[in-house]
Image (cartoon, rainbow, N blue to C red; front, side, top):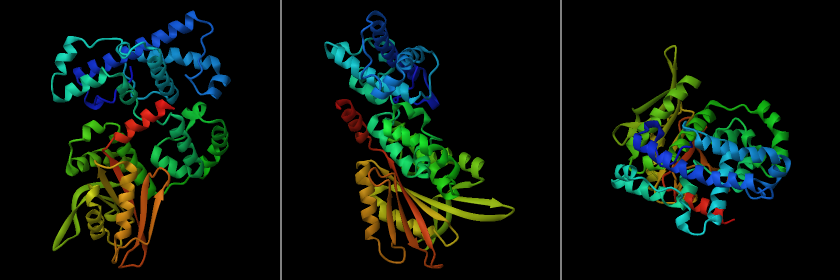
Length: 398
């Protein structure tokens, strides 16, 4: 079975298991219909189920992939990850089935049994019950992301070709090998040519590694957006701390502290949201401070961060919680607010990373005490997921 983006598998309950089994039973029966057609109609073509080039190069592998997808859906073990080729195929099968059905009532093959209806008879459960009976929702909760779709994948490959270091920072893949057969022909060729070179020359700094780990956690959180919808700044900071402290310590020997007193808060010491440092042989090396606030309060967030960043730090981080705007509007807001800041800590440079689909903004300012430059990485935790559904709907129409 595959995971469903309506269930928290870190704290899997019997109801969550029932929801997972129900959705997978519908997927299983849809794929079974496709297999039956393949086995009874020798002239049935697989055009549309796989990228044209992939199907032409490896027709038998494509055919086998359908059976493999069916087997993993039928498995009693819940997969925490399935390869992109299976995601691409499942997405295509959902579209095919929608075209085949005579009416909307025929799209959902199995009815929800009474025991599951009863278990979902509460405020949160009613929403889940509605979604698992709405075929359109299957395009959303059956996939953790849409990196396998042509537009998204091409953007990822282009970023890798332009900067393997940035790609690794934001997508956390050692490489894109699992996506090779889904790539556009010219990009696949360029990727294969550049892969070995990039592996041999990619040396990432510790500051970039820290940002990379934070981005990885944020991406994981965003896959479980329902779990964070009602959490406030303090709770999300605690979640972020718990998720990242073990990794930063085991990989890089760093310590992550919450609510550490330092800097200034008007007339007294302030408390940082996250303080990242290293202690070895009694010597403390400061690395970064992270401030977490709602994006509407970005200017206050930036100024508060400046109150903590003394000359001994390497860099700063702002994490903006965005519940109301699109991701693009959020980064536009941050860039505009940065441009409005004046005084000793006014940014001397503001750079959007991957300008077309901004991944983060990096600003640079002069440290008054030393005259040296210091970077601040501006990240967004996107808690408004309307864009995600819009992107999936647009992809289906193409």
